[in-house]
Amino acid sequence: MPKNKYAFFRGEIRPIEEARISIMTSAFHYGTGVFEGIRGFWNAEEEELFVFRMPEHYARLLRSARLLLIDLPYTVEDLCRLTVELLRREGFREDVYIRPIAYKSSEEIGVRLHNLESALALFATPFKAYLPEGGIRAMVSSWRRVEDNAVPARAKITGAYVNSALAKTEAYLSGFDEAIVLTEDGHVAEGSAENIFLLRDGVLITPSVTANILEGITRDTVITLARDLGIPVLERPVDRTELYVAEEVFLCGTAAGLSPVVEIDHRRIGTGKPGPIFRQLSALYERIVRGKEEKYRAWCTPVYSPPAR
Ligand code: PY5
Image (cartoon, rainbow, N blue to C red; front, side, top):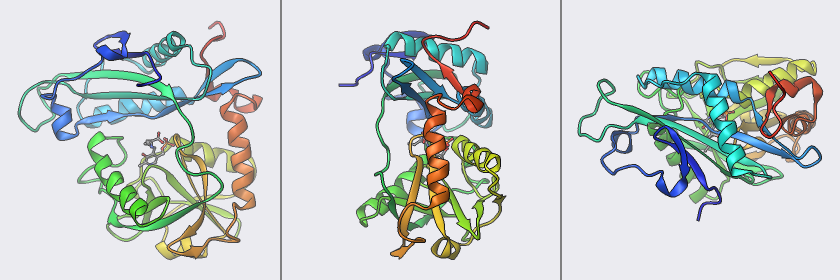
């Protein structure tokens, strides 16, 4: 039983039971959908639910949609308004995960992007930790990341998540918590569902946007916070073995938050404990997402008491 009661489906907020698609749906067969993962964080003192960087997520959804020729009759503002309306209807008083998905909805045979109808669906559901807390053990996957000229990782395409699922399950079945995936040319791309950062000589390093990564919003948040704290940040190609000799490594994503990696391919990272730069960034991030840092409050959309515009 889902803990949410509603979904936006076929142009309306309806009971979740009514939000069903046919087995003939094009996107179900060919992975021709694009989606987002957005989180809402409950602030108990203010009795408020804050949605983190919602316009940025919807801007990315519309960019992903453009890549797959999915036409949506909504602006970023429409999508934000719709999400707030759905969350208010649900009345959540806990952390939630918001999942919009836009997809080729025609019920007919034929692999293509053109001359098919598109649809948008949206639901939100209570959410707890995605990765184990306190430090994760990772392996470099034997699978390689999807290439931009095959399946662009820059767009959050449902079909591309076969790549993530292969990597994640290989890691899990091999006794690890998460996979780190390399590009075809052997450089570090990202985790199965997270971007990656490493610290070397006090410089925070992350693969550039041309390394077949999803251009993560948490990645952007981390870069912004690091620079605000005076920590130098470099976006550049990263070798596999740089991970082994880094002082710190961490993953970041909407679902995962900031998650320290303490072991990779049986090598201890740094001291084998979450490092000081990770702890500094993570502590700040945890406060920011709940609207507790005035300076970054603009990133948080309050659900129950939006300020008059
Ligand atoms: N890379 C991949 C492949 C991802 O799937 C994600 C997010 C990220 C990076 C991080 O991006 P962002 O910071 O914008 O979230 N993954 C989704 C998430 O909600 C789906 C996880 C199942 O975190």
